[in-house]
Length: 202
Image (cartoon, rainbow, N blue to C red):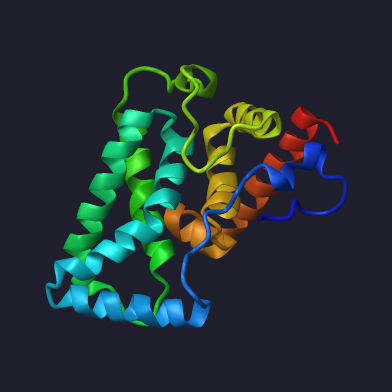
């Protein structure tokens, strides 16, 4: 669970955006297993790609959904992300973390999808009719309030919050995923958090 930067967290915000953590007995063992899976994928072992899909599917779904705010489109983009990841994994450099690379592919898919759409993105409140839970989020009132607050941010500000605190990327990794400078990520993030404090009340 992430910590809201600095003091006076509004409405326990740090408890409302949940990071989809990597699974595994231990992080070191998990990373070793992941590198082995990547190595096997690079020689064409499709079964070794299955644990990668299972491990990162939720965080990619949540990340994309918070950017496009359409469940059906998000599901399609997650599938496309993994197809592109499989097609490109032969050139992935072993020893590097896999999640930032996957998130970058997912972000590109989401940005392209938003650019192709001719109508405004569906508000979170409308997208969530029928009681279905948003991917990666629970159903508490506080979580709902935070989701609504996120939807009031500009697209640029919402993206950096999602990548930093939901996808759990560093500011440098978020910058790489968005194709912008790290300083731009930091400034947008600072402004986004300030706006969230104003919206939610500090």
